Length: 120
Length: 110
Image (cartoon, rainbow over all chains, first blue to last red; front, side, top):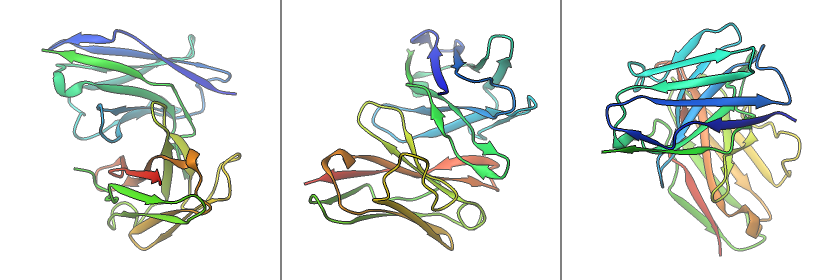
């Protein structure tokens, strides 16, 4: 059973960089796409971006200029960096497997989520 | 504002059938498959349906999804108290070159 766990600081000062890591257990991160998704308190889900099975990245146009997703296959982890954080970036951040499985589109495994607060 | 539009709420009594709509456009639902996720209070979303109408292993057949043109829908039959949750549709958007979620629908069991 694949399991994902987010980790990192829960509080980030304005204008600083949010850094989160997702550790995957129960399977290798190789050969899959991995994404970050966030959810502001009381609001809906927003896809942030993914890193593909060959290390190619694709980011949401609304966050493209501030986002970097990378991976460390030796640690079976992938990471998110979001620069110039503001209070608007306060959200629960989820890591998930997907969205592409060949021609199939889905997020099948999710982490439990981690609340990150952007302080003023 | 979400690219995919859902009604903010839906409700029904136990045993009833509830349907949730998801309206998109030619760049997303019209040209790509639809996913549905269930988010119970305080938990991560769970995949409920993919490729328009396929249920992952373990998802009860009370949940059925479909797609027509630029819209998708999720039906919950035999509504149960544990179905009280937020439901999100999602699809790939070719114009945005990204994955987009619906605005979400809160289902209440009366």
